[in-house]
Amino acid sequence: MFSFSFKNRIAFNYIVSGSVFIAIVFLFIFHIVKYSVNDHINEEVKEELTKHLDDVSTDENDTFFIQVDQWRAREHNSINVNPVFVEFYDINKKIIDKSPNLKNADLKLFDTSQNDIFVNSELNKIPIRQIQTPIINNNKVVGFLVVAMSMEDFEIVLILKNILLITFPLILILLFLIARFFAGRSIKPVQTIIETSSQITKDNLKTRIPLPQNKDELYVLSENINNLLNRIENAVDREKQFTSDASHELRTPLAVMKGTMEVLIRKPRNQQEYEEKIQFCISEVDRLNHMVDQLLLLARFENQKQNVKQESIYLNALILDNLTRFSDKIESKKLKIKADFSDDYYIQSDNYLVSIIFSNLISNAIKYSHDNGKIVLQLEKTPTEIIFTVSDNGVGISEQDLNKIFNSFYRSDVSNHPEIKGTGIGLSIVKRLCDLLNVGIMVNSKLNEGTSFILKFN
Image (cartoon, rainbow, N blue to C red; front, side, top):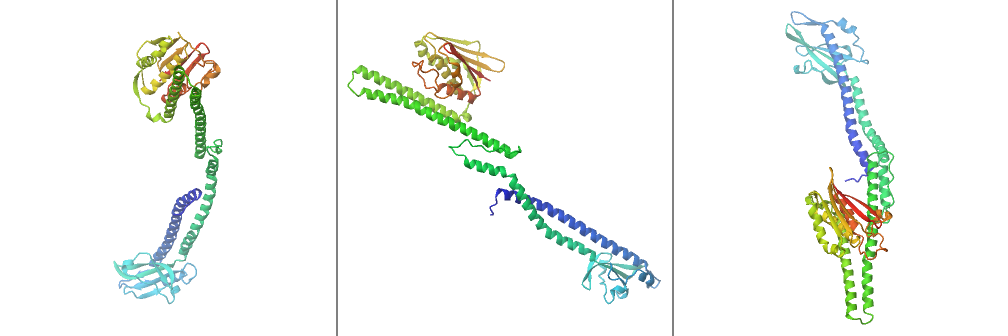
């Protein structure tokens, strides 16, 4: 198998299709010319045959007479200009007379089955077209008339055939070169894509493919590749940021536990001190486990799209279940919970994923509420959607931090509230799940006044 470049394959395919078309055109021209020349020769031979039949007369003894004067008046002596050859035979196929231009040669008389049929023959090795017809008297054949004409006119057909056979491959070669030239220009953007793609590595994702001037398929291809590179670059940047933040967040509790253990073994301690330090390390391990669980959960959602279930969810019960789960924390902070459900609310979505969203939002509302604070959980329905709102009157979020709260590991105003523990992953998980389930999410907040998260289910 020959290995053709893409440019040569385009040119070759063009030539294959073009050669079929050109061959059909050439054959059509050849047969039209051949038919026209043949028809012209046949008409002339037939016309001469008719004229010479008029020169023949017969008597009652079946003897036919030839009007020689009229015959010779037609200048049959000229052999150089479109010669016509005539020959008469009797019933016994013996020559009675012939045109002077035949001289010592004779036309061939064929079997009677060839009567009135044009036949190609030779006269002194010169191609001729002849026809023979019976001479009839009283419904009886008394002789034969043979008329022939040189086929010099037919030489134009042979010349045309040779010309077409010679020009056909020359035309194909010329068309191949032209097609190859234009194919090269047409796929030039492909070469640009190849050269640019070879420059793109994991450390160099900034390069983009120049868009062609013509907005054709190659323009769309280049644009799609650039969009793909944008998504890959964003994903790599998120991964780098996530890895950096995760390593920092995981390293911090490990460093704290190591420091605590080192302090603990420097000198003997009483039992109470050992218990306090060990209890502190246990709490850090629990926090580390919780962070790892959230990181694994966040990683799962990257390819979760195909696994989303569609089931009927009773939102009222789902909210109450999450409140029951956090009942100890609610009681410890003496929070007042107001669940405002005026009706039963159902949606079609993934129950497990929606439960994670509710759990994170309610947990945050409890975590960032002041003692003796108030949390309002509200469900309402519009003609097109169901709206769930979680509101608290806690510490709130500053305006400059609102657009960052869904970033992984980001925690607002940590220095002013060191008593509030967290990993900064919960809201990132909420945002990922809302995007996954096509749930709209909004946040309204004022610092030291409270925060409201609004979910819109279609």
